[in-house]
Structures are given as structure tokens and as C-alpha cells.
Image (tube, rainbow, N blue to C red; front, side, top):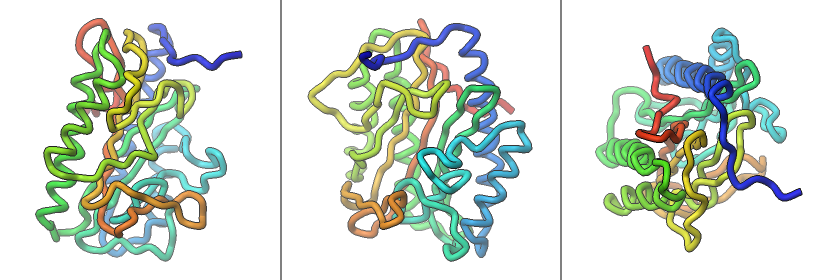
Length: 256
């Protein structure tokens, strides 16, 4: 049987996805607030698991295709899929990217952000985070019924080009709702394919990964940790977006 190219959710499912997305957003916020210079990423991973369970959810990433962490914690030149480790200590000025998935009542929320630990702020790091954050919002603005996946990709890539940042091509956004990764894929760069047309009821994760240097990456021997080829820093932001008949709805925009 041919796999679907996209999924349209009904109102009942969207209500469940909204709750999971808000749980993921709150968890991400609380985990980011817990980051301290001198702690290990293993300690942060334990804190993250406690936060997620305290919200009534389950860490979606734990054991997903064998992934051993409760969230992804990626420091400096680690782009994505960093695993919490007692040997990785967060230092002043480090870029710490957290990717947080929460499963709640059968639905999945998924979002990510990068922060700078401590008090040191290099101008290039601040710009990297600002541009990557802006790229998510540019992608969201293009996520309108009647547009195509390619319109989101172009908005994200053009934001990176304006700042001469490397756009990671091996890892892309995706659909999300009942499963963590659902169709369609949402690249952060323009390809020859325009992708599927956007329709109300689709839920997409838009997640640019931008590098200060090359866009080239490699995966370590643990088969998870992805690093930049040139050792320069990377940033990662992600929001879940509901396509509607009018404006896109950012499901992981925290409603305090």
C-alpha cells in the first residue's frame, strides 16, 4: 500500500495535538530555564525527563529507534541528536540546543530551541540564534493553505542566505501528530520538487538547523550525534504549525 503524502487531522485530533504541543512547549521552557554552567548534559537530560513526566507526558524520543536520551541535547558544533552524557559539561558561552518531544494521551508535541549558557555572548553566536529563530517564523508565515512545501523551504533558506549561514540539508522538518515523524518532509532548502500543496488540517514541524560555517555534517560512531564538519557552532529552532483556512497557528507557541 502506498504511504500517504500528507495527513489531514479532524477537530478532535487537533484538540489532542494542541494539548501535546503545549505540554512540549512548557517542557522546553522549563528545561531551558534549568540549564546551568557546570552541569553535565546527563543531569539536564534527567531534569528534562522529570519535567516531562511532571506534566503528565512521556519523553517521545526515549527509545525512539533506539535513541537512549529523554531529549536531544546538542552543544556547540553538535547539530542534532546529542545524547546527554556525564562527560559533557556545559560551559560559559556554550550554545545548548534542546529538542523536546512529549507524548500525551496518544498525541505528540515536538519543538526545539537553542540558548547560550552563562554570561558570555559572542556576537556571531547571538546572530546565529537570532537568524535561526527568525527563519522558523519566516517558514511559519509561508505555511498557508494553497501554498506548497517549497514556499516554506524558500522562506527558511532565504533567511539563512541573508546572513551567510550554512543550511543543514541532511535533516529536515516533518509532519507530526500521532507519530513523531509523519509525511510530508519539510526541507530547509529549496529543491526541484515543490512538494505537496498545503491544506487546512495539516500539522507540520518547521525546524531550521543553521551553522556558522559549512553546511556539511557527519555522524559520530554512536550513530546519533551529528556534528558540523568544520567544528563551528550550530543552532536549531523548531515549532509545530497547524495549517488553517486563514493564518497558520503555532501550536508550540507557549500560552502562559
